[in-house]
Length: 281
Length: 275
Image (cartoon, rainbow over the protein chains, first blue to last red):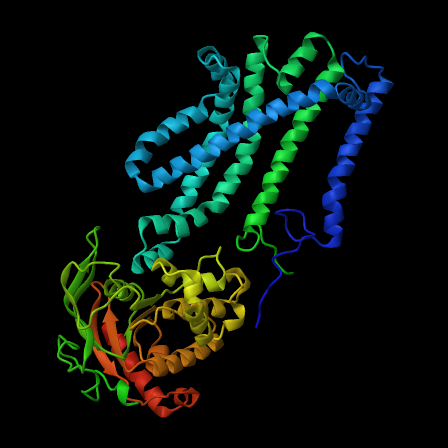
């Protein structure tokens, strides 16, 4: 019998297509090589043109500054990450909850969805200062800003996922007298999982951006302790290498969040969903 | 097979009177349709004037061109649709789980293992996992998949997925099995194999089967009785008994009785399609 039982291979990178040894090498060393040449070129240009560090510091200096300022940058990173993940958690609870409500009541969906769209299309940069004025608690204000941008992809994706349950399976559930609750739990939610995880991956990055943007808005008022505030602060003091170091840290945080959710997606879907399972060739 | 002598009391050529099936004497009917019609919300008349009875333990096929409403008939019988006109009368009490439904597609939950897919009807009845293990294993062994309980649907071939789908329909020990072109998407070798397995199981378990197909050859091979349908609106234009005793096997496929029956059914189908 033709059975392909090769859906789990721990050696593969998460959520990727199947890799031969050669492809694996390209996947790892390709980006590394490119990154290496960019960094090398950067260092080279800075040195050959003798660009002063307050205009453009070389990568070596940036790393040096990162290590020197670790005691102030690391707590700031934690502050920003805390806002990011709190906002993401609220976005997940709110987005999934609202999507379930939408799937149960067409009325709720028709009245609330336009509002969610308005929230999504209004640039957070524009409303962050307002929120900071109206909300006294800075942390809460930052949280709201990050939540606004992270919320929509989760709501929209989960909504679509809940509606995408197979029609014949719905008939089958009806035939066996499944309750609405059983249908939600055993059919709609599992159908929505791949969509939700896709939304989560987008929302993870957006929550970080939302947090940073809000910190900038708050930071220009002179308050803050997150990474964005460190960037502003370094700018005011013309400590450009430190500015770059904070920037580097933000990038790393974003990449880590993305990788973590990609891994989660792979872990949850690899046995059954076409987006994550590997094929024998 | 004495238990399978249902609804084929009249012999010979297809009947051509306006209500072909209604007057058929049926010993111990399971259900009957009386003047059943279905008009969808869009105004489309999908079915008109359906009159037929299906006896217990019978194997009846609905044969007709695409779009003639065969699937709609099955969905009416399953209670997934309500008739717009006429009545569907059950002659036995039918509870949830007494009807098994097999769709044209395997319609499995991709996120669940074969075991959990087959367990679904029992789970929806609220029966806990440990209590139903034997039932699920029995259903899996009926379709020859006892070794694949832990596999996931995407790891199976098309024929195996269909077997899982059939096992799921059988797990509640149904009285009536409704099958909507279940083998249409399979290759011929697999289809013949599953045809034979279905007939063996039916002989052993004596369910009533209503089988929808657009294949003349498949309907003749499987059924005791074929209801031929025409479209626009969907209606039954003829009924043909296939009076060949069971068990039927590959030798039947090569026999002249098979060829003759196929010719008769093809002629009737052609008439139904207005050619």
